[in-house]
Image 1 (spheres, rainbow, N blue to C red):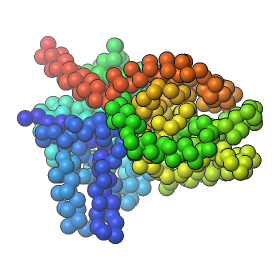
Image 2 (tube, rainbow, N blue to C red):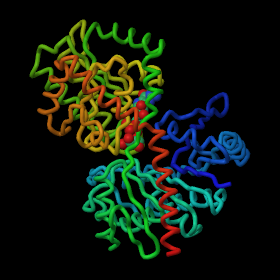
Image 3 (cartoon, rainbow, N blue to C red):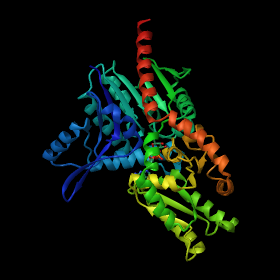
Image 4 (spheres, protein in one colour):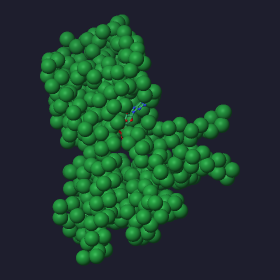
Length: 472
Ligand code: GDG
C-alpha cells in the first residue's frame, strides 16, 4: 500500500531535556494541525528534526522509538549543523533574501555546504522509509534542495513541495550565489505550491530567466520532465479557534484581562520576534495615534505579544532592544496612574490565553512588511463569534489576497496606519459585522483541511499527467 511521507525541518512534536528526563510535547503550529490527520493515519510518517541535540546512541534510540509510536521519524542534527544550516544558510541567507531584506543576508560558503549536507541527510532519512509508490510532501525553505535529491534517487516517486514564505522577485534571487542550484532543487518536485499567485509568478520568472525553462499555464517544461506550479493559500483549523474562543476558559481569561484594562479598548498584536513583522513601525504608528488623537488617551491600549524567536541570529537581538526601547519610551510619555498605553509581553502564551485575547480584542493589528501568509489574521477572524472586531492587515501579507474586507494598509505608510487605527476604533458595529461575516465565510471554507486536500489531490493529478505525457 502506498503511503504519504511529510518532511519539514521541525517535527510536529518538540522533544526537550528537563530535570525529570525527556519530555515530548506536541507543537501547536498550523502545519501540525493541518497535516495531523494525514501523518497519523495508516502507515504515513512525518520526518524532521525533534528539536534537541542527542549524543548518546542509547538516548537516540529511545527518542526514535518514542516518536515512531506517533508516526514520526527523527533526523538528528548536530550543534554545528544547526548553527550553519539552520541559523546560517536558512535564517541568515534565505529568510532575509526571500523577505526582501537582502541587506541582512550573509553569503557564507560554509553555510551553503552545511545546507547541502543537511538536505542530503534528510534525503537519506526519507529514502530509508520511502517505497516507489509513496507520496512525498516536502515543506519550506530549509529543504529547497531535497526534491531534486529525492528525484535523482527515486525517479518515479511522487514528490510535492510547498513554500511557506514569499517567493521574491527574480531580482532578489539573482543576488544569491546559489540561486540556480536552489531553483533546480525545487524543480525535482512534480508539484510546487505557493501561498499566492504573485509568489508563483516570481518563481516562474526566475526559472525562465536563470534556467531558461519556459512555462505555460503553470506548467514548466524542464529538459526531463513537466513540473506543475500553483497557488494554495494555507488556511487554519477554523473550528478549533471558534470553539476555543467561545469556551468557558477563554471567557474567564477574557474577563480577567478586560478588567485589568480598566475598560480601555484593546488593539492586539501577536507575532514571532522578526524584522519581517513590522513590529517597530507598528509601535511608532501607535505613538503617532496617541499624539494626533488625544481623545484615545485612557480609552485604548495596545496589547502586544512578541514570541521569542531565533535569538542566536544578530538582527533578532538588535530588534528586541529596539522594541523594548520604543515600548518603554511610549509608556513613559503617555501612561497615567490608571492607564498603560502598551501592555507588552515577550513570551509565548498557552493556546487558551491566546484564544481569550482574540476574543477580547476590538482591533487586530497585523502589519508585517513581508509575510508569506500570516495565520494570526485568520485566527482572529475565526475567533469572533459575534462578528464584532476590526482587522487591520498589511497588503504585503499573503493573507491580504483573500481578506479584502480587512482595512488594508501599507505598513511603511505610518500616516495610513494611524488613520486605519482611528477608523477601526470608530467603525460602526454594522460595518464591523458585515466585513467580519464575509471574512469568516472565506476562512471557514478554505480551512487547513481543505488546503491539504487540494494540494494532495493536485499532486496526484500532476503525477497522472506526467505518466500520460510520458506514454504519449
Ligand atoms: C510561517 C510564515 C505563514 C503566536 N504566538 C503564540 C502562538 N502563535 C501562533 C499563532 C500562529 C503561529 O504562531 C504564527 O504563524 P504565522 O503565520 O503568523 O507566522 P510564522 O510563524 O512566521 O509562519 C507565515 C506560516 O508559516 C504558515 O505557512 O503564514 O507567513 O512566515 O498560528 O497562533 N501560539 C501560542 N502562543 C503564542 O503566544 N500557543
